[in-house]
Picture 1 (cartoon, rainbow, N blue to C red):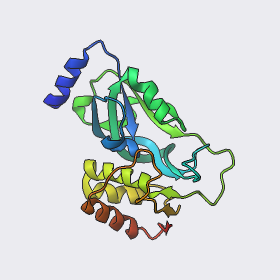
Picture 2: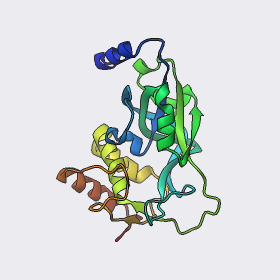
Picture 3: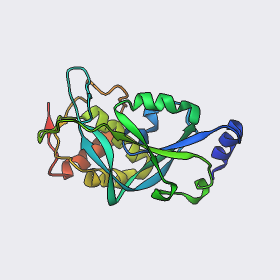
Length: 213
């Protein structure tokens, strides 16, 4: 465990409850986190698969949009992060993820660096509410949301992480609404020129992906 994280844990105190929640989308990007979390580290979650879906009640302004979710899926592994946070902050995270249900996940389903396995905490993942009347025509993906997600993967995993995300995430045939210059996503991020070029390059390598204005 890094000296920096050891120091943070010492400051928190041995008796202070902490939790870990698995991020597979925007939670991967530290720029979108709104609690004073302890640490965010690379991790993989077994038997869950990331996909684009339309949860119940998602609405940004006049737009109904698709968001990421993870669903139980045997033999699939999803790459992301574990965010270690104070247990007292969990209601704030639940509020942020109000379109999702917080599910308990087992320690043996998390592939994480050995030095973090000894932390005494519960682990969770957020699964989107299922839409009662799913249709074949899914609402668009917000480019501003996708930018936040992919910037996080680029920061954590480099270019290979962005490529893996694009190739491994299901339902990427959903059109992307180009709102980068007028973001509708409430936790939008600023991209450097290099980040924009890399993200756009890997998206355009997937022939299932289309863009709409």
